[in-house]
Image (spheres, helix red, strand yellow):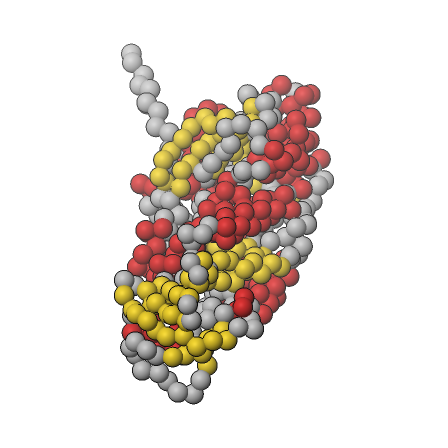
Length: 437
């Protein structure tokens, strides 16, 4: 408590500001001048009336104010929250706008909930920047957020390429990125909190389900950057380990919508399922064309040769319409009923929950550096201190009548971003058949 009092006198206990050349002594009867920001013209003396039960009680005139050891200030019985700048770096346009808008919507919903909660001592002030889906804008805008405000936490980035672009900026400024989308794994950074799924929480359980239901002869497609490359690389290894064969593997530039060559090759090779790691407009164009193929040839209907994905959610269903029917995806959450406008996807929900997690961590952190706080107490907040990844539920689900229906579920799957811990790899065990003579 004495340390808190010293911070008060030095003017570090936001939201009050203190000034004066003489440093008062600790104890009752100390007079200070102070200013409450929302009473900007009111300056008055007050006395430290008492310090007990984790509060400093300050009397000025007929009124009483309390400052808690957690930093929350009460005036006339009203709690004044501690304001924390929060960087928000999502695109409102571009080829993956639907995904980006989902995480942005979830983030701002979480901010609104925290700010409206009178029992929470944190108030977030969003510092929003829009990269417009252009990779080269992410790092400069991240730097602008961190240099123009007091933000040390940024919610942002959709693609793995954009995430990797901002990490050097985070390293230089001792800031933290909260990344709320599935990614390919094979990365840990002290400057990133990975709240959504990595490969052992999406790709491996999805492939296990596919192998048991459709065999081990897939066709792999992906966007031509690290997400597509790594997802298809790991899938190829798993298929070969299972004794199967990848019939084809193709990549499209991000945003490319000419899929005629892909469709023609798939029609010729006749795989058992398609692993789709395309992103945004490329994925939508392919899925519409594949639905048309299924209408021409029964082999390519969902019950015979489905398209499966690690990154498709409710957020993109409105853009697909009937072409979404029969698609299979994997994630930590799917809506049990049709969502309006693609809302309530796992992208949106995890982003919203992550804001609540950050608020709780800031309250508990005190003056400890955030990085060391995670190392010591991250697991109390569902974050693996060693990898900064989260333990998640895993569902494999299929779109039926416009709604994802869960086909298989795993609980509490711990992260394994480097795929070195087989005990953390979900699978569907099936009895082995023996030949009896």
